[in-house]
Image 1 (cartoon, one colour):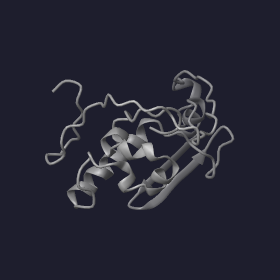
Image 2 (cartoon, rainbow, N blue to C red; image 1 turned 180 degrees about the vertical axis):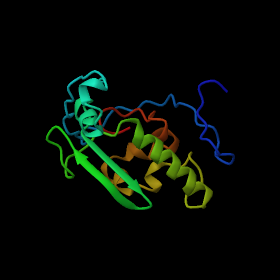
Image 3 (spheres, helix red, strand yellow; image 1 turned 90 degrees about the horizontal axis):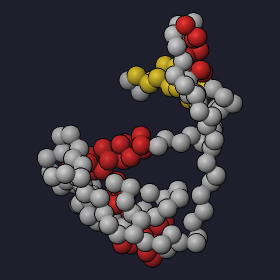
Image 4 (cartoon, rainbow, N blue to C red; image 1 turned 135 degrees about the horizontal axis):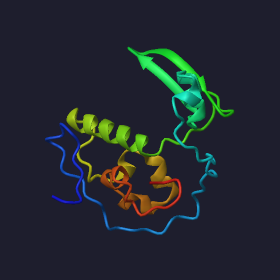
Length: 151
């Protein structure tokens, strides 16, 4: 069906479709200011001397980690960032969250993506009762109607 998203290997998970529900943002939620990232073009191999570290630095990467078999093999930070810096994950967080929700449904920890998100993130219910109308599906598709730092 057009406009729907289906996770690979998710036979038992219903297709995800964008929600049309829009709620006004609550006044109690404040977002941290965005971290400015200067625009950079993709560096050429010649400009980086063929080095991965030079390439990452020239490409605007702020953190690069290599993990294999639960072991951290490589860790490097750029542009003044360190392991304690807040990183913006953009779409990566949505992909991980979707995969984890699919696993949780498969294992029976979550019944459905149509459950309210407040069944699992109790703090949201305490912050604002309107969060009770937002489903897991809304969060996974970033269509909750919230603005700012809340999906």
